[in-house]
Image 1 (spheres, one colour):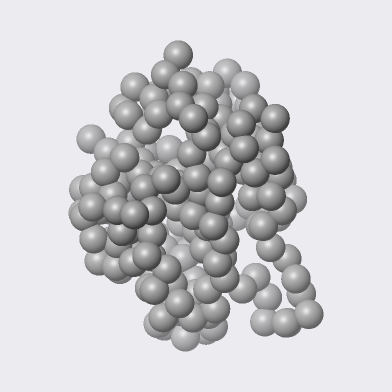
Image 2 (cartoon, helix red, strand yellow):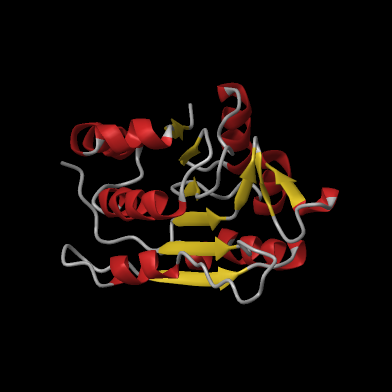
Amino acid sequence: MTRRSACGIFCLEGDWSNDLAHSSTVKPILELLSQGGGGAVPYVHRGCGTLEELEHYLRKWAQTGLRRFPILYLAFHGIRGGICVGDQRRANGQVTLDRLAALLGDRLSGRLIHFGSCDTLRIDRRNIQRFLKLTNATAVTGYRKAIGWLPSAAFEVLLFDTMRQRSFTRAGLRAIQADLRREIPALLRDHDFRMEIRD
């Protein structure tokens, strides 16, 4: 078993509603993981209501000084091949994988990006591999369909708990896939979960 010490999560979260009184957030997922009995998972959580905020924090995470947070957790509304930031009615609110790759650069070896967003990975495998090659990220995970708030929150606790136990080498990532298929196969199917490892 290729085990690792708990690895950190760098979470960027968009607005889930235009109603400012609506306070949904994925932060409780991170807080639960940070108190985990199998090894606390450190995290950073930042809200991104604008494209400028997203760009700022993506550049921060891509710096080598934040390698102790190898998982980028993007919690946003999603579209096929991208995420939505700010006002979804505006064209510049849709950020494609190619745009994300340009913002992140090519220094992401040993890092993984989880898209906690509906539909983002409902695209051709070649497009995902292009993103992985442009960024040099080790893998991406996410969903190929619309997902429910509470079911996906429960799923992501289990997903990140499994990830923290393995390295992000090719062998470690294959072991994560095997662990998930063995431990929560029904949830993988229900969420149409996808994990793509860089070729």
